[in-house]
Length: 162
Image: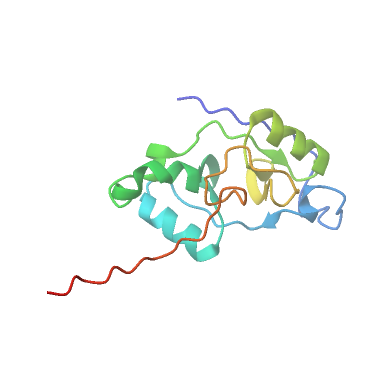
């Protein structure tokens, strides 16, 4: 299977880390990575523990996909029996570390996605999200969207006296 990666190369991340007029100023550096053979339960656990919604998927040091909380939602009852590779997005849209924030926003809107792995010569050095850039999520789950988020209340039913 052939994978498609949208990326450009602008030099070395380490050489120019001090340059902050690009996506590096808002990205999360060193994001949590997951392996395609890990279970969805592990992915869910890491996302909940880190309070984030997406993780790049790497195999042998190369980006092979991305998995999101949105991808896990349909499988809530069977997270332990499925692998990340079964649900991850393989055609990952990435952005080079030296790209502008405007370019990142353009890619997010054009592809209707919520995050971009930030790469340096094919190596993941960060992740930048719609939230990082102040852009609305393209496909928010109801619990993410403040317009539809509701407090969940618990009702206690008094047992019938008898």
